[in-house]
Image 1 (cartoon, rainbow, N blue to C red):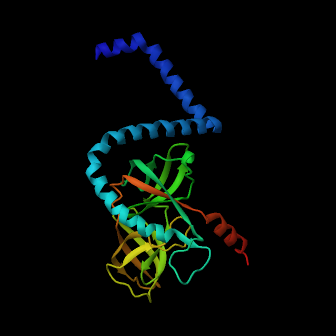
Image 2: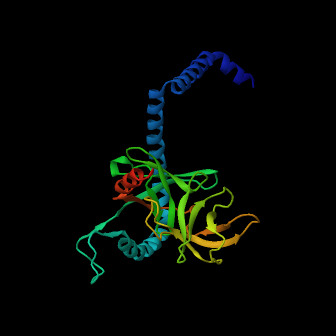
Image 3: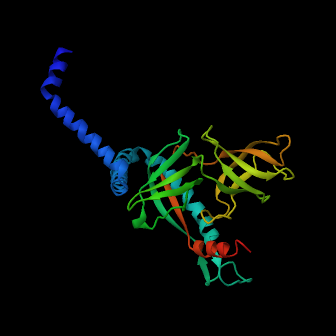
Length: 276
């Protein structure tokens, strides 16, 4: 204890200088918007790079699981590519048409940081604006929905996970077609809630929940999960439904960031007719 006290006496001016420098640094960032943006951008670059390096070290131990997932992914992509087609000219004689366009594009990204135990969980992906990533793009993997892009930098992006209290996704019961809003209440990281399904709907435990396709973030029929339980509270006209996720969000490796090529056209049309 005496040696520690002597150390502070001898080098106290240095410690005081470092403390005051740190305090000034915090005050500058808090009270100057431009410096704050520079700090946040630099911090994202540094932390993203650190996460990337750490993830590369652990990636070797996940090779067996990645290989298995790639085999399943090849089968799923065949269906996914068919769902991506948009027919610009109708052809009743053939399922394939040379005039077809692809509505959705998919960018592969690597998850370098992830959380599931917070109230608002986020995912760091090693793709950013340099690769064409923009906010509000949907994120999926081979097992289903993952989240939505929130913040983007040049080489990294942050997605809000499906396990985020502010995330809502349009989902439907397949094949019945009843649709509602999917949200997470912050309890079990394997269970989310589907709301606004009317009480006259015929549903059962085990029914499949998929994306409705009403949002430009996700194509239709992307897997979300299955009905785990449901009930109708007295005085309510819609069910409360617990959905067991098909995707284990604690084991994310590679993801697909979705770009809707017709998004702007759809949103401009909807905005133009909003008040009619």
